[in-house]
Image 1 (cartoon, rainbow, N blue to C red):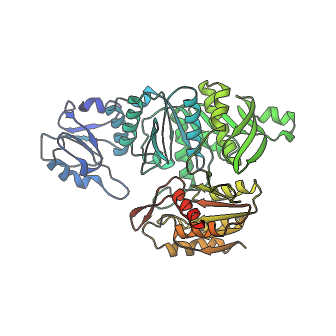
Image 2: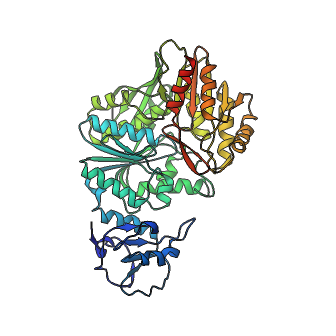
Image 3: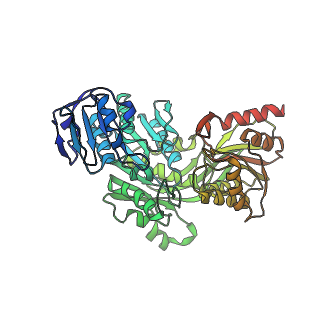
Length: 502
């Protein structure tokens, strides 16, 4: 799919160092290993590698255009050289142009926040599709287009890949696109130049702060706030303490959602009620199927059942319902979609067979805040015991390990400490860090480094009324050990453990 360079540059400020903007470009790449004849190479000075050092390699392979951030000398006069201030921003905008601006051909919804992004994207997708339209998804669980799911490395993929996925959605006939917009995705300009019809904020708490992510909470908040300068309508959770700071520089219309305490009085209610608010919250346990119920007020009016457990799913449900209402979806369709929503790896119930007397759930919680949230959720259903199986990822902040250990120690009756994705760290070193958090509590724990063996132990020792929760892996189908991804599935691990009971 050849393009003329000047068409790719139409939304960029640039300097033509040499060559012609009428040069034909057959494709764009930012990875020098993928260069072939006639391609455009974007040299990015990254956090780990400086792409400029690969320019001699791409010239040998036949690159026709090189886009640079730095002054470079290229002896080959047949090669066009373009200089820009920001290579990542240039890659994003050129990629959108290369694929003919696919986002502009769909109604687009971008969701940001610390927790709830994946669940809310799937709720929104279900609402849209039950209204008879087609919706693509981009997020932690991958790219989903008409039932086909493609795993991705990042929650928000690199900009070229992102625009390619959007083009696939348009070609597949998608009317809508909903995506998780991570703070890293914004910081790394993966969505630079994009504009959303709706921008959504779920909540904010310290996470992704460290040497390879955000330098501090202020930067984390700032990156998320930028979404509200990239959309027409912002939808925000007014029960989050950071919401006003997040939207203070917003350039969009703001719609709000939140919980309202019915006991606060009519006068307070009238002054503070959001555009969508919930009252009368209930936990529902129907034979081990956990859900939530609330009464919707404002943009919707009526009883709502969210087919997932936890107060946070009240918020996710309100958020998705607000999006649906603003999209003009009929109330009955929204209610049906929320009641029957299923999200892989998000408080996902695993069948254990009749007469077992205990239940098993899988959740992606992998930091202190989300762990505390999901365990408090399970407490709302009054189990006899909560048994939490968890580890922590390697090459990530140690603070996350302390916080997860403390949360599990305080809220679970038994912790089974095991491996997650140790990456290049020794799993026992990670477990020692987790034990620092556990030591601050009176919680009981056992250490079983092999994750399958940890699941076996919990299932074999399960008691009547127990809830076993597997934390951290969620939808993932692998364990990363010493840089290699080995196949591992929580569902298969549970099935294996149950088979051993026979």
